[in-house]
Every structure is written in structure tokens, then in C-alpha cells.
Length: 330
Image (tube, rainbow, N blue to C red; front, side):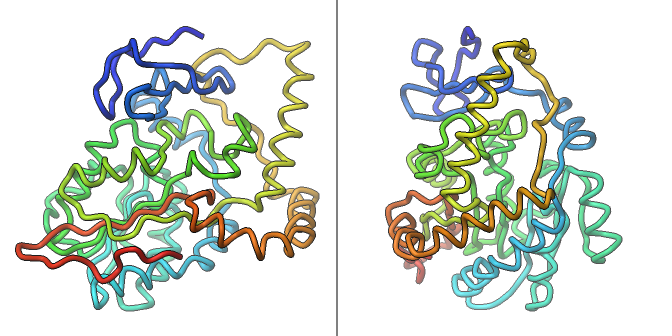
């Protein structure tokens, strides 16, 4: 597929530096030879993405709730960094379970969510203050929040600089920005290849490594206080590799008799997470791989090779002496 993009929207380099990264369901990821940034070419328009999230995008509510309950440690990070609770904004808050957990611990919370069903659930069922929209719809709140978090959101945004500029503006001096994104340098990304669960167009517009995310965050004057990797919402490594390799074989067989989807298709791939056979298979891999995972998991985290890349950064205060969390690993 020919490369059409003529400028990297991260570093600004020209088209002579671009190479093909992956072609998936008619979509094309390209990589910038100068900074290593990976993103879709062509990128969906804001209107196309808005329509996609309203009509096609799906996320299992039970799985999301369970994943949040396992990751309460991010509230621990925020409270240690700030020394207390405070005003919290979550961008892309989905069904609102993380905000609900924060509210129970004394935070004053607000969210923004583009998906109508998820935003309605958060407001109507959980009683949260959630705006239906994107980060650009959070208005008139400069310097208001002690913490702004975006869990698996930045990869959905075609303009990461705008996203981080608005996020930084919304923070108080000394406030904390928290980001979690799929990690292109993870072991699972390398082993699963183009069928990795998070190399997923069109919702995942931009993909990150430590070498692209940290400099981007610090470009806005933020001080990185934590950069680590974490399994988080990722699946068991061995199950994900098995799933990816199986999918690759099936796709190869189907492509012998079927025409590939047209470029720019907004139809998401089939999802099986709620099927009993799928969950049973995943559980089998969890149990069978437990002895190996007990040894390997902490090593992958320390080496920056787990599925999620996690960054916490502080908006500096005048005369700030640095952070109490620098170098902390999960």
C-alpha cells in the first residue's frame, strides 16, 4: 500500500523518512524514520472517529469493571505524589468505574467520554459528572485539577500534542498527569506481531514507545516522575500469542478466497471476549503458565517490556525540588 502521509505529526519530518509498519484490515500503519512514531496513514477524521465510537466501538462493561478493580494502585500513586486526594479529571472515562473508585476514596471527580452508552451509564447508573465528548469539550477549567488521567486514551487521538497541551493547561501547578498506552516495545507486541490485540485500527490511531511518549510529555514542561511498564488490561502473554498466531493462520486461509477489506473500513473485527469457550481457554493459559509468569512478569516490568507503557508526570511549581516518586517501579 503506498504511503500517502507527508509529515510526521509528532516530530514534523517529511515523507522521505516514512516506512511501512503494518497493514491490518485495509488500514496502514507507518513509522517515522526520524523519531520512531507509528500512526495510521491516512488518519481518520474527528467526524469519522466520533461516528465510529457512537455506532461501532464496543467494550465489555464487566471486563472493564474487573480491570479497574485490579488497578487501584494508580490511585495510590496519585495520592502519594500529591500527598492527599483532590480534584480528578479522567479523559475517556468509559463506564466510570475508575472515577467511582476514586470518589469512594475522597476525590472530587469529573469525566469526559465520547461513547454515548458508556457516558450514559456513568451519569445515570453511577451518578457521576461525565461530559459526552472529548478532551476539547472540557472548557473553562484551566488550573483546576490536581490530577488528570487518561487510561488507554492517547492512542485514540490523532493529535497528541493538542491532547497534552489541553491536559497540561487543566492541571494546577504541582498537579499530576497519568497516562497508560499500549507499549510497542512490549514482549507481547513483538511476539504477536500484526495480530496483537492492541494494534487495532481505526480506534488506535497512534502507537507509542518510551522513546516517543516521554519526550512528547516533557515537551509541555512536565517532569516525568514514573515511567514503567505493566500488564494492566493486557491479556496473559501466552494466551495472547496463541490467539494472535491462530488468528494469523485463519486470516491467511481466508485471504485465499476472500478479497481484503477496503482501506478505511470502520467495521471492527469480531469480538469473542464474552464467549464461554474464549474465557475458558484464557483461564487455562493463566493456570498453565503461572509458574513461568511468576518469575517472568517482574522482569518484563523492570525491562519495560510489559503490555502497557505507564507514565506519570508533574506540572512544575516555581522553585520545585523534584518528585518523591522518581524512579518508582510497579
